[in-house]
Length: 70
Image (tube, rainbow, N blue to C red; front, top):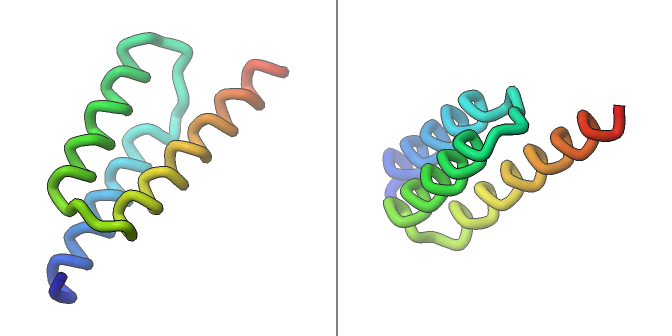
């Protein structure tokens, strides 16, 4: 990948994180989250992209679990 493609990938992942950081206990929220993560991964299809997306998904899950325990 070129540096421009790297930049676009990081930007897409940042926008993805920003969009889903307010975790909701809603089936549509989770469906959209997974579908969008899959679209981003298919767009870049790199190990780095996969790793970053999985980290974002782990963080969303962590926040969700913390909210449930309150």
